[in-house]
Every structure is written in structure tokens, then in C-alpha cells.
Figure 1 (tube, rainbow, N blue to C red):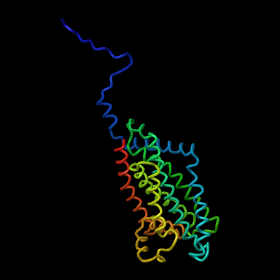
Figure 2 (figure 1 turned 180 degrees about the vertical axis):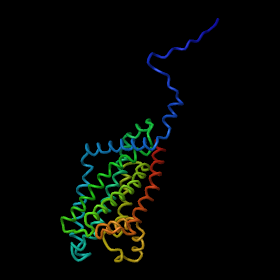
Figure 3 (figure 1 turned 120 degrees about the horizontal axis):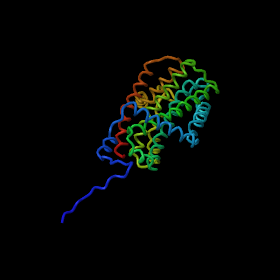
Figure 4 (figure 1 turned 90 degrees about the vertical axis):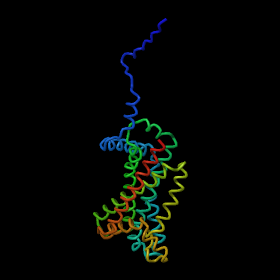
Length: 283
């Protein structure tokens, strides 16, 4: 007896998919243009989330007003003799503190999305691995900008008069936004390695408070003990604060500005690949 095997034809309008082609298409590396378009799509998703959850702007809208007024009137007389003399020292420090607080939320929100399974949907898409990470960070540039502008506006309302003029203020705000965006990569990396959003927030607070308060953000470094002054001088936040002070108060592009920009570039060069690698492993 002869057995004949007949292949069942594929239904009309369908085609057989080669598994190797699927793997090749999924694991192929998108071009720079495709990566940029995908990143912008993720940024648009982040903006829509902000619109649907306006409570994400509470730290952006309230913190600059609260901390600027509170620190100025409580510590102004004790540190500089008057509020008006303390504002040129305080405003750049508040800008740095606000930027770090706002960018800390990036890692927390990333971890929340990963816990909800949102990022599981991205692993089936042939998109660049950096797009789901960089996209929300581009959207957060709006939050950094709003927080920085409100801080300067609050300072102006209580008597701050920046010697750098309009260009100095624009430069100081721009540097603050760049610094916040670069530091956000640290918290993004933490969001990919931590086990929960609560742990991300706890670790981020332990990083933010020492870097902010053990700097020259609120007091002159030469008033501190020698051992603490040595740490303050090497603290990267101190360089950012000094650079913003030079721009706001004097309108001068000094060496501190160059060091601050260089430090931001180093942070991105280190933590952006770490975040992408950790995220890819979890995918």
C-alpha cells in the first residue's frame, strides 16, 4: 500500500511567514532616523500621560514656590544678613534642587510602568531599545523647564534681580534643564534595576539629599568645616550651582559652565548605556 502525503494549501490571501525572517526583523538594529522617530513617539506618549494625570505637575508647580519663599525668609537673615542679599545665592541652589527632585520622578514612573506590564508590549515591537527610555525623558524636559521658570519667577517676585539680565536667565534655565535631563539617566537606570517603585524612590532620596544639601546650593562653601568643604568642592551639584550662579548673577560663561556641561555629558555617557543594557536584559 502506498501512502501519499498531500500538503494543505494555505488559505487564499494568507502567506507563510518564515520564522527566521521574523527574528531577523525583530532583532535588527533601527537606523538613527528610525530611532529618533520611535523616541519621539514615546515622548508623545509621555505627554499624553501628563495631560491625563495632571497630579504629575504638583511637584513642578508647588515645590519651586514653596521652597524658594520658605528658604529665603527663614535662612536669608541668618546666612546673608537679609533676604535680598541671600537671593543671588539661593535661587541657583533652588534650581538645582528642583531639577533633581523632578528628574527623580522619572525613575519612579518608569518602574511603575514596568511593574504594570506596559514595557512587556514593547518587546514584541522591532523598535530601538533606547526609545522607551529616552522618550519619556524628552517629555520631561517640559517639566524641568516649567519648574525652572517658576523658580526664577518666584525669586523675582520676592526681590531677586539677576545681574545677568534676560540672556543670563535664559542660559541659567537652559543649563538647569540640561543638568536635570542628564541626571535623570541615573534614576532611569535605578528604575530598571530596582524591584519596585517604592525602592526606586527610597534610593533616589538617599542620593538626592546628600548631593543637594552637601553642596554650595544654600550656603557658601568656605563657611563649612575643612573636611566638608573638600567634599563640597568635588560634588558635581556644586559645579552646576556655581555655573548657574555665574550665568544668572553675572551673565558670564565661566570655566564652571564648561565643567558643568562636561559633567552632564559624562553622566549621560555612563548611565545611558547602563540603563539601556539593564532594560534590554529585562526584555
